[in-house]
Amino acid sequence: SSTSLWHLTDLAAQRVAIADQVAAAKYGTPSPIDDPVREQAIYDSVAARAPQLGLDPAEAVRFFHAQIEANKLVQRGLYARWTAHPAEAPTTRPDLGQIRPVIDRLNTDLLTELAATTSLREARSCPVRQLVAAGFADVVHRFDGLHAQALAEATSATCTD
Ligand SMILES: O=C(O)C(=O)C[C@]1(C(=O)O)C=C[C@@H](O)C=C1
Image 1 (cartoon, rainbow, N blue to C red):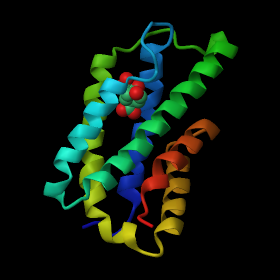
Image 2 (cartoon, rainbow, N blue to C red; image 1 turned 90 degrees about the vertical axis):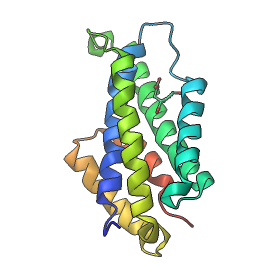
Image 3 (cartoon, protein in one colour; image 1 turned 30 degrees about the horizontal axis):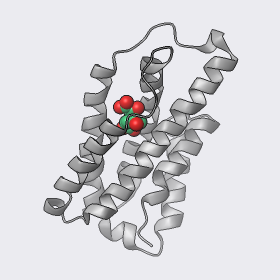
Image 4 (cartoon, helix red, strand yellow; image 1 turned 30 degrees about the vertical axis):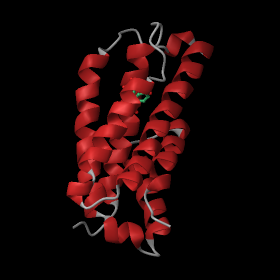
């Protein structure tokens, strides 16, 4: 099992960072930010894999709900930025079909690390440790305010109250 929340937090930060590519893939296309079918597929997959990792499916789904809300927070923030300042909008459009496998991999790694951090996430010290880890990740990933806010959202479901 893990001795810190760092790896889990770094994985969440990588998932927040990849939202930039997702937004660039969808911006200016008819594909909406929200894809409920894709979200449900993630929740179903997470819930199905949770028990063999010793995780409560509902708890695992709650954690991934926060990851997806964080991702959408970045996408919406970037859309607003790009609409207000078209010069900042991406000039090339990545293929969502190539980004989702990377997200799938991050989801798998997050689920594994969620299981490895169960005792840390249940500890009284969890909230302050999570706050410190997220602040460190903001610096390591050079996050701006939008991405730092998203990582705060993503890590809001780490500790089990
Ligand atoms: O895969 C997408 O289309 C995304 O926008 C990423 C993501 C996610 O965080 O996994 C976020 C919003 C969508 O509703 C579905 C999934």
